[in-house]
Length: 285
Image (cartoon, rainbow, N blue to C red; front, side):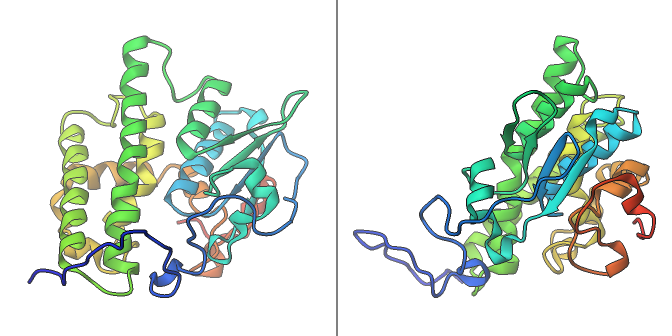
């Protein structure tokens, strides 16, 4: 059945009443809505984030760097509650004018500087520590291609499929079908690639896997968007499932997944992270 026709107005205006779950924070304007400074810890890197897929990309990378012995990757992770609009405080907007998590403040040098948008943070950290991003031009290009494939694909899976299937105030056939088809196509791209190689960029675990894992794994596990796993027939992507299983058991991945997590079993939550000891009494997935 076709959706009821919608005729756009001659001049669009924001609808803050019927916009669904996020109507209270979604507005067509940028900038700070509240004056509030961000906390700053003692570590070289200050991360302001939440354990959504985009946030987990960065915490997994930081934990992987620490696993390799890069002590300069020590970080303080501060939770930004996006449901409460904390991404619109003056402090956060100063670190990310786009008001999206994650955002990073690099204080390791003489002058602190910001890095915002998850893909940029991943590349910055990989280059800073010389890890998970090859220097060979062809291998580097392959890794970066898969990293930015994820950056481009994420909005279709999250703001597209996730929004219209799980969060929109009403379900409509066209947007759900449109984004379900695209989400399945994304899984098929990954599945075909992983039928050819152990990891996305080849034989070695890399930034490509770190970027994509937090987005693809929750679909495999049925942890995202209600019954999306069944609805999208995720079990048919056997090579993606194999890849998810191999990555999920890495110690750094297990730690990174719970940083800035504020839902589920309290034992699996680590709302703030300041040192390795913070994981001592936590249950790692």
